[in-house]
Amino acid sequence: MAKHSPGPWSIHGDNKTLIGDNSGKMMIADVLHKHICPQWNRPLEEAQANARLIAAAPDLLATLLLCITDDNAASMNADKPEYAKRRLKHINEIAREAIHKVLDN
Image (cartoon, rainbow, N blue to C red):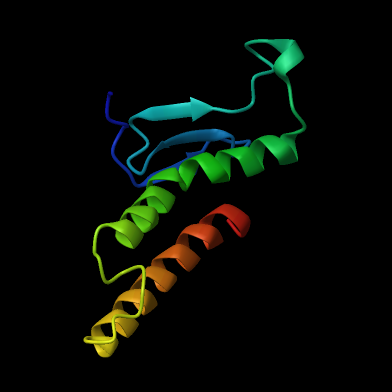
């Protein structure tokens, strides 16, 4: 399977419907399709919400990977409660940042 373009990704364009890398030099997607295929056209607000979700994909994937890459990440390990607490707090912070990027951008 091919690897995706490296993140972070961000929103670009006057309509805020283009997704690209943070440098603005590499386009990932264009979610406002009215100029490509009129029957795929979505309301601008929906296209912008889709763009935010797509732009957050690398952050969301990173959060999920943190949840599964360490045996102690998914549970409160009785032998290492402070480690588990710090780990879960870190995952929570990263997850909240990714969700904020989708919902509040």
